[in-house]
Image (cartoon, rainbow, N blue to C red):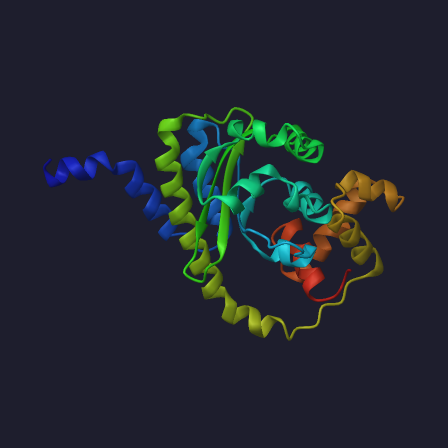
Length: 254
């Protein structure tokens, strides 16, 4: 094959790599992944370190490298300890490699808790998916999942999806490293939350949606969202998951 022909045959891969190289934050990585893979039904993506047995909620949330799935699912997942019953995590922790979620039915068939987790995820649009786990040079295991209501489970795409996961995780780790210097100075900055902001964050950390927080706090869903947005701004967080993790890390909520 001639050099030009070889390059043309890899056009999609080259464009994907270039787009991720230009990413300046982890949100860009999630967006580019879903843009490139939307044609196969990818709607949600997450990459996170696989929690060790007994890992607390703070450790689980801090392990998220990037995520574009419903925030309420991430916080509910950590609050209820789903990571230790999720058949997806169990498979990734047991065997490094890739699989489609329709291969998990046998593992979940005799475990009501595992079936419930898959059913709840499906209700939020995380119905069909692909997962893979990779080891870093630091001997950490990172799990990566793509999902959607109509995600295509073509076995021939397994290698391509594994390549996508590998490069995305590498880019995310690099971006986290680049931002670590800024975080060290930001940690010295005192954060003061109002009682209502703190309460809203506490309920969010339990996996409650804005409308549920509004009901609990005797206010409208809009009011709950307003307190959450204010808390996110003070914490320098771009979404609910990061706000909850940062609040827990700083000891602002339990």
